[in-house]
Structures are given as structure tokens and as C-alpha cells.
Amino acid sequence: MTTTNQIQIDLFGPAENMHYRQVTLAAPAANEVQIKHHAIGVNYIDTYHRSGLYPLKLPASIGMEGAGEVIAIGSAVTNFAIGDRVGYCVPPVGSYSEVRNFPADKLIALPESISYDDAASLLLQGMTVQYLIRQIYQVKAGDTILLHAAAGGVGLIACQWLKALGATTIGTVGSEAKAKLAKSYGCDHTILYREENIAQRVKELTDGKGVPVVYDSVGKDTFTASLDCLQPRGLMVTFGNASGPVAPFSPLELASRGSLFITRPTLMSYNSTADEMQKNADDLFQFINTGQIKPNIHQRFDLKDAIVCHQALEARTTTGSTLLIP
Image (tube, rainbow, N blue to C red; front, top):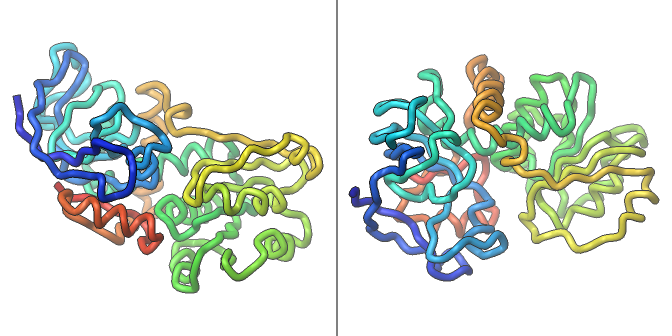
């Protein structure tokens, strides 16, 4: 048995519903390892679990991403040993903890070249970018794509990776400061979504053609505009709900815009086996090790200050990646 500090929720709701508590942790089960976190990644999906948009069984801890060292292993674990450097970015949730147990078959082995902070800031967001631009739609040199929230954690990684692939990125942002930040990470054109007509600007930037794919993590506020930016037979990838979930719509909306496609993917669907997960992580690590993708950790909070962290995240005052430090 191990005693650890952990963030827990008893009721779904606002950030203030989170509590910093000391809990007793059992020894790892046969197929689990016990991890001492060195860094914990904060992602917008954490707010969905906390609010109840993606319900959990209560009481619960939250958090999808962490990096640290293995301090104990279950009796059936053969692929990891005590002292190994590991990270993860898939369920079960519960990374907001100093120490936790986690299934060995969902762990990613970290190379020595990747620090714990970098892993916790890049794994979930980087693996998200990996399946978006390397699997769902395989972006190639010469493509022009639309990326919403270009100055966010996923956005800044995507801007770098898309630049490395030779693509042109049009990114939406909420302020001039965020536009400047996105451009510094490789975004070619920015649209101030509060001031400009997104679809009109995209058509201007593409000589009226539109784009073959839109990556939209904002949801309700940008959904229709995103559809209007697509070329005939283009692909709408809606993968987040920062402004709220998309309202029900008729499939005829896709037909009237030129036989569009739409998908609502999840990270887990594109990383469903241990081998697949490690392969996709290694793809990410390759671009990090060559310097084509750089960490963008812009905020660090103590674990006990998770409430303040979530308030900043939901107020959209954060940029890049955010960490909780145990």
C-alpha cells in the first residue's frame, strides 16, 4: 500500500469541484505498473471529464496524460521493469496524482532523449496530431489545410509538423498575440475568428478553391464555417468541443456543399494496441529528436493548484502546453 496525493471530484461541475486529497493506493494488479509521476499533462478533455460532458464513475480522479518512472510492477508484467522511463496518454483517466497504477499494455517507453516534462507536454497532443495528419488524412507537401485553435497545445505541434511535411497551414486564433505565436511555430496564415469571416478568408487564401481538410477542435462555434471552407469531397475532422458540442444537423448539409465527408475520431481508436501506440509515438519522437517539433510548455502549476489551472484553461488565457507538477 502506498499513500499519495491526488486530485479528485465527487460531483461533476466547475473547476472548484476538484479536491486535493491524500489517498491510499493498492499495489499494482498483475498486468499493471506503479508510476511515480514527474510531470502531468493538462488537456482540454480533462475539463470534459470534470464537467460531466464525458461522464466518469464518481468519485473519480481525472487526467489523461503523465510521464514518470516505474516504481513497482505486477506479477504478469514482462515488458517493463522498475526504473523504466514511461509515459501514457490514453485511459484509464487518473493522471492527476503523485503516484498511480496503470495498465502495462497502454504504456509508452520513453527514449532518453525525451525528458519527462517534454513527454507529458507532447504525448497526448502530439499523438493526437499524429493520427490527424498521418492517418485520418495523410497530409502531403503542397496541401493547404485549415487548423482551428492554431495557438493551442495541439495547434502549435500541428503547425510545426505540417511545416515539416511541406504543407501550408491556415490557422484560426483569438488575438493578435496568438496569431504571432502561431506564426512563430510555422503557421503560414492566421485568421482572427472573432473579427474575420473564416470561410471568406479561406476562399481568398486558396483562390476560391477551399481546403481538402479542416481540423476543428472548437466545435459549436466554428462547425458551419468549417464546412463552408471545404472543397467538394473535402473532409471535416471534428475532434473537440472547446466552445460546446456541435448541434445535430442534417446529412443534406454535406451533400449541398459538394459531397463532403465528416469524422469524429478519438485518440484511442487510432492507438488501440500496444504495438500501434508505440509505433505512432516513435513517429512523433522522430520529429522531436530532429528538432522539427519543439516542446511548447508555456504554463506550469503545482498539482495542488489544479483549480487555478483549469480556470485559466477554460478562460482561454493559456497557450501551448500546460503541466501539473506533483
